[in-house]
Image (tube, rainbow, N blue to C red):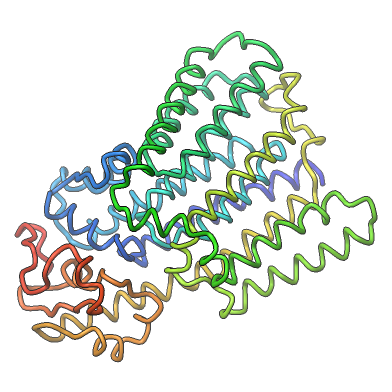
Length: 442
Protein backbone atom coordinates (compact mmCIF):
# COMPACT_ATOMS: atom_id res chain seq x y z
CA UNK A 1 0.00 0.00 0.00
CA UNK A 2 1.45 3.37 -1.05
CA UNK A 3 1.84 6.22 1.42
CA UNK A 4 -0.79 8.26 -0.45
CA UNK A 5 -3.38 5.50 -0.35
CA UNK A 6 -2.62 4.85 3.29
CA UNK A 7 -3.05 8.53 4.12
CA UNK A 8 -6.38 8.64 2.29
CA UNK A 9 -7.61 5.43 3.95
CA UNK A 10 -6.71 6.64 7.41
CA UNK A 11 -8.49 9.95 6.97
CA UNK A 12 -11.82 8.08 6.81
CA UNK A 13 -12.23 6.53 10.32
CA UNK A 14 -11.95 9.80 12.30
CA UNK A 15 -14.53 11.37 9.98
CA UNK A 16 -16.87 8.39 10.42
CA UNK A 17 -16.41 8.42 14.21
CA UNK A 18 -17.19 12.13 14.51
CA UNK A 19 -20.06 11.81 12.04
CA UNK A 20 -21.59 8.97 14.06
CA UNK A 21 -21.27 11.03 17.25
CA UNK A 22 -22.96 14.00 15.57
CA UNK A 23 -25.82 11.81 14.36
CA UNK A 24 -26.17 10.40 17.89
CA UNK A 25 -26.47 13.92 19.30
CA UNK A 26 -29.17 14.88 16.79
CA UNK A 27 -31.07 11.65 17.49
CA UNK A 28 -30.83 12.43 21.24
CA UNK A 29 -29.11 9.17 22.15
CA UNK A 30 -27.75 10.90 25.25
CA UNK A 31 -31.27 10.46 26.72
CA UNK A 32 -30.99 6.68 26.60
CA UNK A 33 -31.29 4.92 29.97
CA UNK A 34 -29.48 6.89 32.71
CA UNK A 35 -29.05 9.78 30.27
CA UNK A 36 -32.58 11.11 30.79
CA UNK A 37 -32.11 11.46 34.55
CA UNK A 38 -28.61 12.88 34.03
CA UNK A 39 -30.12 15.58 31.81
CA UNK A 40 -32.89 16.21 34.33
CA UNK A 41 -30.37 16.58 37.15
CA UNK A 42 -28.45 19.10 35.08
CA UNK A 43 -31.62 21.12 34.51
CA UNK A 44 -32.59 20.96 38.18
CA UNK A 45 -29.12 21.96 39.42
CA UNK A 46 -28.72 24.48 36.55
CA UNK A 47 -25.22 23.25 35.85
CA UNK A 48 -22.92 20.61 37.28
CA UNK A 49 -23.83 17.70 39.49
CA UNK A 50 -21.70 14.84 40.79
CA UNK A 51 -22.85 11.23 40.82
CA UNK A 52 -20.10 8.84 41.88
CA UNK A 53 -17.28 10.79 43.65
CA UNK A 54 -14.68 8.36 42.25
CA UNK A 55 -15.64 9.51 38.73
CA UNK A 56 -15.63 13.22 39.40
CA UNK A 57 -13.21 14.23 36.59
CA UNK A 58 -15.08 12.43 33.84
CA UNK A 59 -18.39 13.72 35.27
CA UNK A 60 -17.21 17.33 35.18
CA UNK A 61 -15.77 17.01 31.70
CA UNK A 62 -18.94 15.41 30.32
CA UNK A 63 -21.14 18.10 31.84
CA UNK A 64 -18.95 21.06 30.80
CA UNK A 65 -20.73 21.79 27.46
CA UNK A 66 -24.13 21.75 29.15
CA UNK A 67 -22.94 23.91 32.06
CA UNK A 68 -21.29 26.37 29.65
CA UNK A 69 -24.47 26.74 27.59
CA UNK A 70 -26.54 27.26 30.76
CA UNK A 71 -24.06 29.89 31.95
CA UNK A 72 -24.52 31.71 28.63
CA UNK A 73 -28.22 32.01 29.38
CA UNK A 74 -29.55 29.48 26.88
CA UNK A 75 -32.91 28.14 28.04
CA UNK A 76 -34.22 26.27 25.00
CA UNK A 77 -34.71 22.66 26.11
CA UNK A 78 -33.70 21.16 22.74
CA UNK A 79 -30.45 23.15 22.54
CA UNK A 80 -29.66 22.17 26.11
CA UNK A 81 -30.20 18.51 25.25
CA UNK A 82 -27.84 18.85 22.30
CA UNK A 83 -25.24 20.38 24.64
CA UNK A 84 -25.83 17.42 26.96
CA UNK A 85 -25.14 15.14 24.00
CA UNK A 86 -21.98 17.01 23.04
CA UNK A 87 -20.55 16.32 26.48
CA UNK A 88 -21.38 12.64 26.63
CA UNK A 89 -21.06 11.71 22.95
CA UNK A 90 -18.79 14.10 21.09
CA UNK A 91 -16.03 14.51 23.69
CA UNK A 92 -15.11 10.79 23.92
CA UNK A 93 -15.50 10.45 20.14
CA UNK A 94 -13.14 13.39 19.66
CA UNK A 95 -10.65 11.65 21.97
CA UNK A 96 -10.82 8.52 19.79
CA UNK A 97 -10.39 10.61 16.63
CA UNK A 98 -7.40 12.40 18.18
CA UNK A 99 -5.83 9.07 19.19
CA UNK A 100 -6.16 7.81 15.62
CA UNK A 101 -4.69 11.04 14.26
CA UNK A 102 -1.65 10.79 16.52
CA UNK A 103 -1.11 7.17 15.39
CA UNK A 104 -1.80 7.64 11.70
CA UNK A 105 1.72 6.70 10.49
CA UNK A 106 2.12 3.27 12.06
CA UNK A 107 0.37 0.02 12.87
CA UNK A 108 -0.87 1.42 16.18
CA UNK A 109 -3.60 3.15 14.16
CA UNK A 110 -5.15 -0.19 13.18
CA UNK A 111 -5.01 -1.52 16.73
CA UNK A 112 -6.71 1.63 18.04
CA UNK A 113 -9.37 1.39 15.35
CA UNK A 114 -10.13 -2.13 16.53
CA UNK A 115 -10.15 -0.77 20.09
CA UNK A 116 -12.85 1.73 19.13
CA UNK A 117 -14.90 -1.05 17.55
CA UNK A 118 -14.73 -3.35 20.59
CA UNK A 119 -15.68 -0.53 22.97
CA UNK A 120 -17.87 2.26 21.59
CA UNK A 121 -19.54 0.10 18.92
CA UNK A 122 -19.83 -2.95 21.20
CA UNK A 123 -20.91 -1.51 24.56
CA UNK A 124 -21.29 2.24 24.08
CA UNK A 125 -24.95 2.74 23.18
CA UNK A 126 -25.57 4.01 26.71
CA UNK A 127 -23.98 7.41 26.20
CA UNK A 128 -23.66 8.46 29.84
CA UNK A 129 -21.64 5.42 30.88
CA UNK A 130 -18.38 6.69 32.38
CA UNK A 131 -16.61 3.69 30.87
CA UNK A 132 -16.92 5.43 27.48
CA UNK A 133 -14.64 8.17 28.78
CA UNK A 134 -12.27 5.62 30.28
CA UNK A 135 -11.90 3.75 26.99
CA UNK A 136 -11.54 6.87 24.85
CA UNK A 137 -8.95 8.63 27.01
CA UNK A 138 -7.05 5.39 27.59
CA UNK A 139 -6.66 5.24 23.81
CA UNK A 140 -5.60 8.90 23.63
CA UNK A 141 -3.07 8.49 26.43
CA UNK A 142 -1.70 5.33 24.81
CA UNK A 143 -1.40 6.99 21.41
CA UNK A 144 0.36 10.04 22.87
CA UNK A 145 2.86 7.90 24.79
CA UNK A 146 3.78 5.76 21.78
CA UNK A 147 3.96 8.83 19.56
CA UNK A 148 6.39 10.40 22.04
CA UNK A 149 8.64 7.35 22.06
CA UNK A 150 8.50 7.29 18.26
CA UNK A 151 9.44 10.88 17.42
CA UNK A 152 10.01 12.58 20.85
CA UNK A 153 7.29 15.14 20.15
CA UNK A 154 7.36 17.56 23.09
CA UNK A 155 3.58 17.96 23.27
CA UNK A 156 2.85 14.24 23.66
CA UNK A 157 3.76 13.84 27.37
CA UNK A 158 1.39 16.67 28.24
CA UNK A 159 -1.43 15.13 26.21
CA UNK A 160 -0.76 11.85 28.01
CA UNK A 161 -0.85 13.61 31.39
CA UNK A 162 -4.15 15.35 30.65
CA UNK A 163 -5.69 12.07 29.48
CA UNK A 164 -4.37 10.27 32.57
CA UNK A 165 -6.39 12.53 34.88
CA UNK A 166 -9.58 11.42 33.11
CA UNK A 167 -8.55 7.75 33.08
CA UNK A 168 -7.78 7.94 36.79
CA UNK A 169 -11.26 9.19 37.68
CA UNK A 170 -13.72 7.56 35.32
CA UNK A 171 -14.55 3.89 35.91
CA UNK A 172 -13.50 0.79 37.84
CA UNK A 173 -12.14 -0.88 34.69
CA UNK A 174 -9.18 1.51 35.02
CA UNK A 175 -7.86 -1.05 37.49
CA UNK A 176 -6.44 -2.96 34.51
CA UNK A 177 -6.14 -0.25 31.84
CA UNK A 178 -4.17 2.27 33.93
CA UNK A 179 -1.34 -0.23 34.70
CA UNK A 180 -1.13 -1.00 30.98
CA UNK A 181 -0.57 2.69 30.28
CA UNK A 182 2.11 2.77 32.97
CA UNK A 183 3.79 -0.11 31.17
CA UNK A 184 3.67 1.83 27.88
CA UNK A 185 5.71 4.54 29.59
CA UNK A 186 8.06 2.45 31.71
CA UNK A 187 9.01 -0.32 29.27
CA UNK A 188 10.44 1.97 26.54
CA UNK A 189 12.09 4.09 29.23
CA UNK A 190 13.92 1.08 30.65
CA UNK A 191 14.77 -0.30 27.23
CA UNK A 192 15.96 2.87 25.51
CA UNK A 193 17.04 5.05 28.45
CA UNK A 194 15.86 8.38 29.79
CA UNK A 195 14.46 10.77 27.21
CA UNK A 196 16.19 14.13 26.90
CA UNK A 197 12.93 15.98 27.51
CA UNK A 198 9.42 15.25 28.70
CA UNK A 199 10.55 13.38 31.82
CA UNK A 200 8.52 15.47 34.29
CA UNK A 201 5.11 15.08 32.61
CA UNK A 202 5.77 11.40 31.94
CA UNK A 203 6.61 10.75 35.59
CA UNK A 204 3.55 12.76 36.61
CA UNK A 205 1.47 10.62 34.25
CA UNK A 206 2.78 7.46 35.92
CA UNK A 207 1.91 8.90 39.33
CA UNK A 208 -1.61 9.91 38.27
CA UNK A 209 -2.25 6.51 36.72
CA UNK A 210 -0.96 4.81 39.86
CA UNK A 211 -3.41 6.79 41.96
CA UNK A 212 -6.12 6.02 39.41
CA UNK A 213 -5.49 2.31 39.78
CA UNK A 214 -5.99 2.62 43.53
CA UNK A 215 -9.15 4.70 43.04
CA UNK A 216 -10.53 2.10 40.61
CA UNK A 217 -9.77 -0.71 43.04
CA UNK A 218 -11.50 1.24 45.83
CA UNK A 219 -14.55 1.87 43.62
CA UNK A 220 -14.82 -1.87 43.00
CA UNK A 221 -14.33 -2.80 46.66
CA UNK A 222 -16.69 -0.05 47.92
CA UNK A 223 -18.99 0.56 44.96
CA UNK A 224 -21.33 3.52 44.65
CA UNK A 225 -23.86 1.11 43.12
CA UNK A 226 -23.16 -2.46 44.35
CA UNK A 227 -25.74 -4.03 42.05
CA UNK A 228 -24.10 -2.54 38.96
CA UNK A 229 -20.67 -3.84 39.97
CA UNK A 230 -21.98 -7.36 40.52
CA UNK A 231 -23.68 -7.37 37.12
CA UNK A 232 -20.58 -5.93 35.44
CA UNK A 233 -18.45 -8.77 36.85
CA UNK A 234 -20.72 -11.37 35.24
CA UNK A 235 -18.84 -12.28 32.05
CA UNK A 236 -20.65 -15.49 31.15
CA UNK A 237 -24.16 -14.07 30.84
CA UNK A 238 -23.37 -11.33 28.30
CA UNK A 239 -21.22 -13.69 26.26
CA UNK A 240 -23.92 -16.37 26.04
CA UNK A 241 -26.72 -13.98 25.04
CA UNK A 242 -24.92 -11.44 22.84
CA UNK A 243 -24.41 -12.77 19.30
CA UNK A 244 -22.69 -9.59 18.16
CA UNK A 245 -20.14 -9.92 20.94
CA UNK A 246 -19.62 -13.61 20.17
CA UNK A 247 -19.04 -12.96 16.48
CA UNK A 248 -16.72 -10.04 17.21
CA UNK A 249 -14.56 -12.15 19.53
CA UNK A 250 -14.34 -14.99 17.00
CA UNK A 251 -13.47 -12.43 14.32
CA UNK A 252 -10.62 -11.08 16.46
CA UNK A 253 -9.33 -14.60 17.10
CA UNK A 254 -9.20 -15.32 13.35
CA UNK A 255 -7.60 -11.98 12.44
CA UNK A 256 -3.98 -13.09 13.14
CA UNK A 257 -4.41 -15.99 10.70
CA UNK A 258 -5.50 -13.61 7.95
CA UNK A 259 -2.52 -11.34 8.57
CA UNK A 260 0.33 -13.56 9.79
CA UNK A 261 -0.21 -17.05 8.34
CA UNK A 262 2.69 -18.15 6.12
CA UNK A 263 0.43 -19.96 3.69
CA UNK A 264 -1.18 -17.63 1.17
CA UNK A 265 -4.12 -20.02 0.90
CA UNK A 266 -4.80 -19.80 4.63
CA UNK A 267 -4.56 -16.01 4.53
CA UNK A 268 -6.99 -15.76 1.62
CA UNK A 269 -9.48 -18.25 3.07
CA UNK A 270 -9.43 -16.62 6.49
CA UNK A 271 -9.85 -13.19 4.97
CA UNK A 272 -12.90 -14.44 3.06
CA UNK A 273 -14.40 -15.76 6.31
CA UNK A 274 -13.73 -12.45 8.06
CA UNK A 275 -15.33 -10.44 5.27
CA UNK A 276 -18.38 -12.73 5.29
CA UNK A 277 -18.68 -12.26 9.06
CA UNK A 278 -18.57 -8.49 8.65
CA UNK A 279 -21.29 -8.60 6.01
CA UNK A 280 -23.40 -10.70 8.36
CA UNK A 281 -22.88 -8.19 11.18
CA UNK A 282 -23.89 -5.35 8.91
CA UNK A 283 -27.11 -6.79 7.48
CA UNK A 284 -28.50 -9.45 9.83
CA UNK A 285 -30.47 -7.67 12.54
CA UNK A 286 -30.85 -10.79 14.76
CA UNK A 287 -27.08 -10.57 15.31
CA UNK A 288 -27.19 -6.99 16.55
CA UNK A 289 -26.79 -6.46 20.27
CA UNK A 290 -29.64 -4.61 21.92
CA UNK A 291 -28.80 -1.50 23.96
CA UNK A 292 -29.23 -3.55 27.15
CA UNK A 293 -26.91 -6.28 25.86
CA UNK A 294 -24.34 -3.62 24.98
CA UNK A 295 -24.46 -2.22 28.48
CA UNK A 296 -24.01 -5.68 29.97
CA UNK A 297 -20.96 -6.22 27.72
CA UNK A 298 -18.99 -3.24 29.11
CA UNK A 299 -16.60 -5.45 31.10
CA UNK A 300 -15.90 -7.50 27.97
CA UNK A 301 -15.10 -4.27 26.14
CA UNK A 302 -12.56 -3.37 28.80
CA UNK A 303 -10.93 -6.80 28.56
CA UNK A 304 -10.81 -6.69 24.77
CA UNK A 305 -9.37 -3.16 24.77
CA UNK A 306 -6.70 -4.25 27.25
CA UNK A 307 -5.69 -7.16 25.00
CA UNK A 308 -5.71 -5.04 21.84
CA UNK A 309 -3.52 -2.34 23.40
CA UNK A 310 -1.19 -4.94 24.90
CA UNK A 311 -0.66 -6.46 21.45
CA UNK A 312 -0.16 -2.98 20.01
CA UNK A 313 2.51 -2.22 22.61
CA UNK A 314 4.36 -5.50 22.10
CA UNK A 315 4.28 -5.21 18.30
CA UNK A 316 5.34 -1.56 18.31
CA UNK A 317 8.06 -1.69 20.96
CA UNK A 318 10.86 -2.96 18.66
CA UNK A 319 10.31 -0.13 16.17
CA UNK A 320 10.73 2.55 18.86
CA UNK A 321 14.48 2.05 19.20
CA UNK A 322 15.37 4.84 16.79
CA UNK A 323 13.51 8.16 16.80
CA UNK A 324 12.05 9.10 13.41
CA UNK A 325 10.98 12.52 12.15
CA UNK A 326 7.34 13.28 12.86
CA UNK A 327 6.71 13.78 9.15
CA UNK A 328 8.04 10.35 8.18
CA UNK A 329 5.92 7.29 7.51
CA UNK A 330 7.53 3.97 8.38
CA UNK A 331 6.29 1.32 5.91
CA UNK A 332 7.59 -1.46 8.15
CA UNK A 333 4.87 -0.69 10.66
CA UNK A 334 1.94 -0.92 8.23
CA UNK A 335 0.30 -4.07 6.89
CA UNK A 336 -2.18 -3.44 4.08
CA UNK A 337 -4.36 -6.45 4.85
CA UNK A 338 -4.48 -5.58 8.56
CA UNK A 339 -5.41 -1.98 7.74
CA UNK A 340 -8.22 -2.99 5.38
CA UNK A 341 -9.65 -5.58 7.78
CA UNK A 342 -9.66 -3.18 10.71
CA UNK A 343 -11.48 -0.69 8.50
CA UNK A 344 -13.92 -3.46 7.56
CA UNK A 345 -14.62 -4.14 11.25
CA UNK A 346 -15.41 -0.45 11.72
CA UNK A 347 -17.89 -0.45 8.83
CA UNK A 348 -19.41 -3.79 9.84
CA UNK A 349 -20.20 -2.56 13.36
CA UNK A 350 -20.98 1.03 12.42
CA UNK A 351 -23.88 0.04 10.16
CA UNK A 352 -26.03 -1.52 12.93
CA UNK A 353 -24.95 1.19 15.38
CA UNK A 354 -26.12 3.90 12.98
CA UNK A 355 -29.43 2.18 12.22
CA UNK A 356 -30.17 1.61 15.91
CA UNK A 357 -29.30 5.22 16.69
CA UNK A 358 -31.80 6.45 14.09
CA UNK A 359 -34.40 4.04 15.44
CA UNK A 360 -33.78 5.35 18.95
CA UNK A 361 -34.42 8.88 17.72
CA UNK A 362 -37.74 7.70 16.31
CA UNK A 363 -38.53 6.10 19.67
CA UNK A 364 -37.82 9.40 21.46
CA UNK A 365 -40.16 11.28 19.12
CA UNK A 366 -42.87 8.64 19.58
CA UNK A 367 -42.39 8.86 23.36
CA UNK A 368 -42.74 12.64 23.26
CA UNK A 369 -45.90 12.46 21.14
CA UNK A 370 -47.45 9.89 23.48
CA UNK A 371 -46.93 11.80 26.73
CA UNK A 372 -47.76 15.23 25.32
CA UNK A 373 -51.02 14.07 23.83
CA UNK A 374 -52.59 13.23 27.16
CA UNK A 375 -52.36 13.77 30.94
CA UNK A 376 -52.04 11.61 34.04
CA UNK A 377 -50.12 8.36 34.41
CA UNK A 378 -49.64 5.81 31.65
CA UNK A 379 -49.16 2.18 32.64
CA UNK A 380 -45.99 0.63 31.31
CA UNK A 381 -47.80 -2.18 29.49
CA UNK A 382 -50.14 0.32 27.85
CA UNK A 383 -47.23 2.45 26.65
CA UNK A 384 -45.27 -0.51 25.28
CA UNK A 385 -48.37 -1.63 23.37
CA UNK A 386 -48.69 1.86 21.86
CA UNK A 387 -44.96 2.27 21.14
CA UNK A 388 -43.51 -1.17 20.28
CA UNK A 389 -39.99 0.25 19.93
CA UNK A 390 -39.96 0.50 23.73
CA UNK A 391 -39.32 -3.25 23.84
CA UNK A 392 -35.84 -2.62 22.40
CA UNK A 393 -35.02 0.99 23.26
CA UNK A 394 -36.86 1.55 26.53
CA UNK A 395 -35.04 1.18 29.83
CA UNK A 396 -36.28 -0.57 32.94
CA UNK A 397 -36.52 2.46 35.21
CA UNK A 398 -36.03 5.48 32.93
CA UNK A 399 -39.62 6.09 31.73
CA UNK A 400 -40.53 8.75 34.35
CA UNK A 401 -37.20 10.52 33.76
CA UNK A 402 -37.81 10.61 30.00
CA UNK A 403 -41.32 11.87 30.67
CA UNK A 404 -39.90 14.66 32.83
CA UNK A 405 -37.44 15.98 30.24
CA UNK A 406 -39.57 15.42 27.13
CA UNK A 407 -42.84 16.72 28.56
CA UNK A 408 -44.23 20.00 27.25
CA UNK A 409 -46.27 22.18 29.55
CA UNK A 410 -47.45 21.40 33.08
CA UNK A 411 -50.05 18.76 32.24
CA UNK A 412 -48.21 16.15 30.23
CA UNK A 413 -48.44 12.47 31.11
CA UNK A 414 -45.82 10.33 32.87
CA UNK A 415 -45.06 6.79 31.76
CA UNK A 416 -44.67 4.36 34.65
CA UNK A 417 -41.87 1.83 34.94
CA UNK A 418 -42.38 -1.88 35.04
CA UNK A 419 -43.71 -2.69 38.55
CA UNK A 420 -40.65 -4.70 39.61
CA UNK A 421 -38.30 -1.77 38.89
CA UNK A 422 -40.12 0.97 40.79
CA UNK A 423 -37.57 0.83 43.59
CA UNK A 424 -34.83 1.91 41.18
CA UNK A 425 -36.46 5.08 39.88
CA UNK A 426 -35.08 8.39 41.19
CA UNK A 427 -38.47 9.96 41.94
CA UNK A 428 -42.16 9.12 42.21
CA UNK A 429 -44.01 9.96 38.97
CA UNK A 430 -46.91 11.33 41.05
CA UNK A 431 -44.53 13.87 42.60
CA UNK A 432 -41.91 14.78 39.95
CA UNK A 433 -39.15 17.23 40.84
CA UNK A 434 -39.54 20.79 39.61
CA UNK A 435 -37.46 21.93 36.67
CA UNK A 436 -36.58 25.66 36.87
CA UNK A 437 -39.16 27.76 35.06
CA UNK A 438 -36.66 29.22 32.61
CA UNK A 439 -36.05 25.71 31.21
CA UNK A 440 -39.73 24.93 30.80
CA UNK A 441 -40.53 23.37 27.46
CA UNK A 442 -43.12 25.24 25.34
